[in-house]
Image (cartoon, rainbow, N blue to C red; front, side):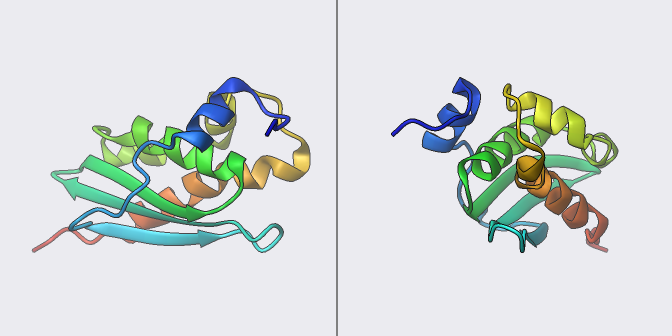
Length: 125
């Protein structure tokens, strides 16, 4: 099967990294794109303002799955502030391919879901 995307998208779609559920996530959020039906769940293990581990599960297209794979690799070890500051443009650029305007939301859904998970995080007392 050939898709009209670059090597990075294909690699991360065929062999996604961190596609699993975390045993004890401290922050989770599910995102949905009503335009195409993509669903992604981001789970984080956070301690001392640092993302120790990031994982995802998805029922999504190649772009969204690849983006979630790349994103979870990138944010592991980052502070919450640095992870929240990642931009849509950085996320799209990491895919290494030009995306049609209508597919940009597929690429940034994991990032927006990650931001929501971080915003809803309540550190243990």
